[in-house]
Length: 78
Image (cartoon, rainbow, N blue to C red; front, side, top):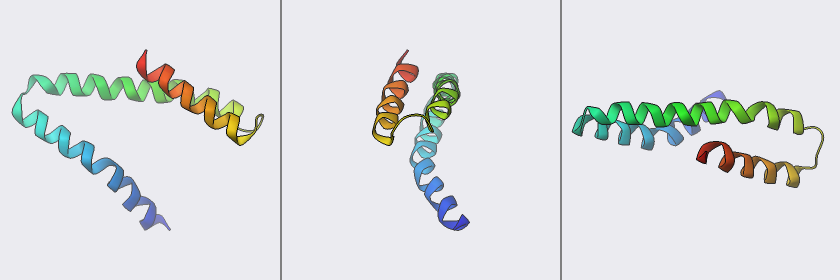
């Protein structure tokens, strides 16, 4: 079970990490931009987590998925 989870996480992360390695190799200034983008994504994830956690037991699953989708767009694009 744990090995399956680790494998799925690696499958999700490897394309992004390989693109990161490529862009850092081509220009060193891209490192700052890539770190800012990744940091912004992480802040957006951490900002919406308490909201989704609070709603997880109060609304039905379909409404929860809609709120999760809209909050992802709201937090990540602003």
